Image 1 (cartoon, rainbow, N blue to C red):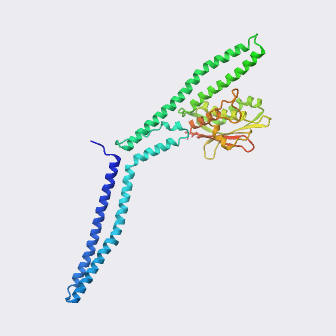
Image 2 (tube, rainbow, N blue to C red):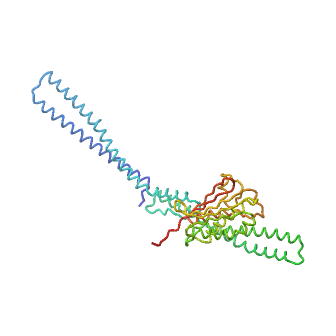
Image 3 (cartoon, rainbow, N blue to C red):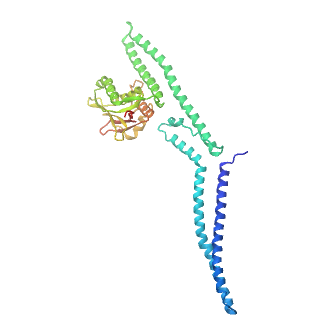
Length: 386
């Protein structure tokens, strides 16, 4: 037995409702017209009891005929229009309800597609499926095709992340070997000054490659939503990170300021530490070099109840239109693209991925006078104790 298509079902439903409404309209109009004629006929019979003949009889008949014609016109036009409006309105309501029920699967497809499209990161929403149930029709075929497409895209993004992680792991071994050979050559007694200088340059390049690979591994891990969460107070994380980078800040002649207020959240402690570390490190490296620079790290509970980590710094002026590009991998401001650069261009992109994996977000805005104010917002840890 062939299953009726959606188009056929809609045609059948709307056609049936139309004919039912038309028959109802005809029936109501007939009843109203019959009632009007019955009233006029009764009036004629009462008046006809008086004997009328000749011209008076003819005039009386014409008068009665005109009255009947007026009654018919009143019934068909005035009362029929009222009946049409009532029946048409009722039919419209019924058709609206029925059509909404029939098209409910299509609405489910649209809402799911909208949620996937509105995901903060494109590949983050690809795990959702429509999984439409019911009879096989055009809408279910559309939903199944959409699910198949999303599944292939999801597998493609997963394969890309696995490739980055595997390639990064494989590249770590030769880089470690290169560092060991360069250090061995530099520390030989017969090594000349030129060899030592070349070795230092090679070690700096090797270190940058190691940072790049570590950043790629961390980025691949951060792009997965965190499942196993534990309570973390970002105040402790901020204090720990500030103590870690104190030496680098002193070497760069940058003053560190800390305002670690209570900021309870939940997630992966190592990833959250990396989030704060990248923000503070980014503030130190992209700063002034005249000894007047500073970096301020703050953790707090925002007015909306969420947790915020804000890192602001002095530094060169940043155009507002350049800020969105800073959160993309391998994007930097200025001439910091040489092979010996300290930054691999993954710091803020890793911050963004970690925040999204924890259900949060990251925003940045230029600071008046130069530098940036970067704010990471995360959900607050809700206590289960009463």
